Length: 274
Image 1: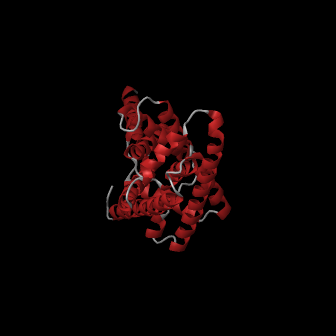
Image 2 (image 1 turned 90 degrees about the vertical axis):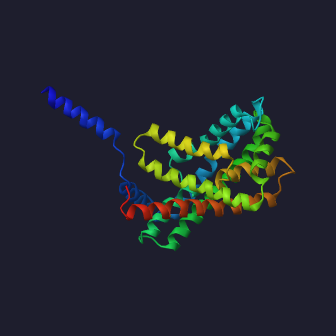
Image 3 (image 1 turned 180 degrees about the vertical axis):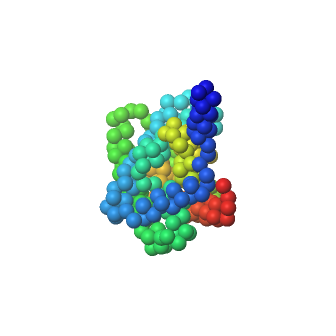
């Protein structure tokens, strides 16, 4: 009896620590991607809009921390706090299962690579989710700029500083850094599928997105809110700066998630990896 109990306990412990095989992760991602590609249009738009709204809480918390902190960018403590605040918006969106364009740069590409969905379906999904994300972020930024003077928790200078961290770069840097941000978001989609528990998923979201924040990489959807705040509160951030940022960050994000994660992971797994 004792030996049987020991064996059962050992098997149970082994099952809880066993990693999810790569083929299972890939299959799950493909099925998820197919589900999203086949979703009804209004559902995608509303979910994307919700994600655009929710992700805005990250930049707001970043501005609050910069306003209250005695340090600034370059100070280790402030940088870590700001990066963690940046991750909050992603936690709201991803754990809440709203649609985020930069997740679909990997997730929705996989069914196309596998021959189970068309490029037209991918384009439809990307277009609807992206439009919802951008409009939701714009609404959030406009609403918060209207309310912030009465709330008194973040200064206009903090929003301007955050925006300049993204727009004060040449186009080449924005594009390449956007690829890195998309790459990390693609890895996040893969790691979330492998994670077994809510706590693990929270940790993965925080780790990846806080890294993006710490490196000040251009994420097209979170950055949409960050730069729009700057446009609304400062004459030093122009509409041209915003449009340039958004175009290059979006292109870089799509390449980073689609090529460096979706194509490479797919090729690795179908050739016997994992």
